[in-house]
Image (tube, rainbow, N blue to C red):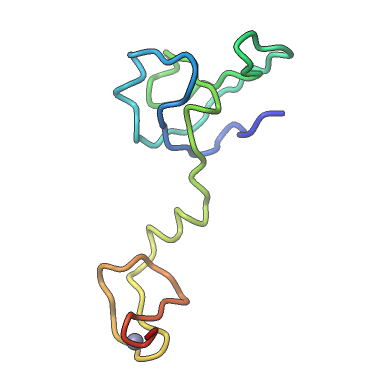
Length: 107
Ligand SMILES: [Zn+2]
């Protein structure tokens, strides 16, 4: 069963197994899965190959070459900076989080 589905956002990371040097430039970049080829028996142990948008579909990727960017994580990085739940101070450089408690209040 495929780990991802078409439209999923992933971050490219260097997977184990076969790795094409052409893939190096994509490490750490965000991509959207545009196509999945299902194979009943992958000879390298990978059952599916993925096509992504940022390489214009040039390369085949396996699910070991990527990690999911959850919609939750997306919302967190795009949200406003948090205020401490207890003292109400604004923390511009902290990750957005409605449950944020500053270091002072936490201790
Ligand atoms: Zn506080």
